[in-house]
Image 1: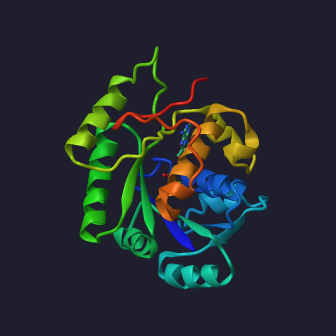
Image 2: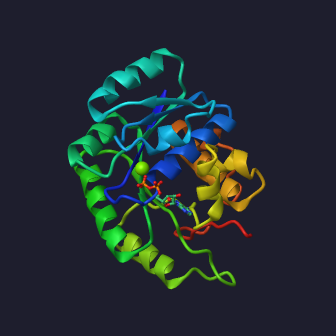
Length: 230
Ligand SMILES: Nc1ncnc2c1ncn2[C@@H]1O[C@H](COP(=O)(O)OP(=O)(O)O)[C@@H](O)[C@H]1O
Ligand SMILES: [Mg+2]
């Protein structure tokens, strides 16, 4: 079993959105996925209360036991949705994770917080990847300055960035308000395509690149972001 922690010290970055949609997309791809909601706000478990995906309400102190129990239950992948604070709770999630996704919006203040989280991952020698969320869509093939500036800063900091970015899309809000992931809500939509691409990327990181299906919107150019045309 593999464990993914979705982390960010900023509320509103999109941790719950990414955790829910990633778990649902991995399940769609045939994985036995469990979503662990370790945030006392319970956003993801409330959103999925009527969903067939296995969702466990938990807390940072119970994560180690949950990982053990999930592995015994035959789970393939445990996705942990985390709170923005306290740091000790984020550390607990990082320590049980095989991969940490640091979700961040492409703004100066969010980036500063994300880089601190990356420092924490480095201190703990934990594997992580920045996932840009709520990015404006490119215009006429060009990324907005806010996105290209964020990418430049991350490159300068030597940070691993997911080539799959999630764009600002109404489907992320609409799907969750009906207790669904975007891949079920609008299977042919752009949000579903980029979410499947992120799930394929995560799958490749966890189980090996050779095992992964080719992401729908993967872009070969290093450092470039992929996008789904709408
Ligand atoms: N890619 C996106 N496009 C549009 N809205 C988004 C996106 N990601 C998150 N949101 C919205 O932003 C808000 C905060 O997201 P949430 O996942 O709750 O963040 P966090 O868990 O980090 O606090 C929610 O209203 C959510 O619907
Ligand atoms: Mg949340």
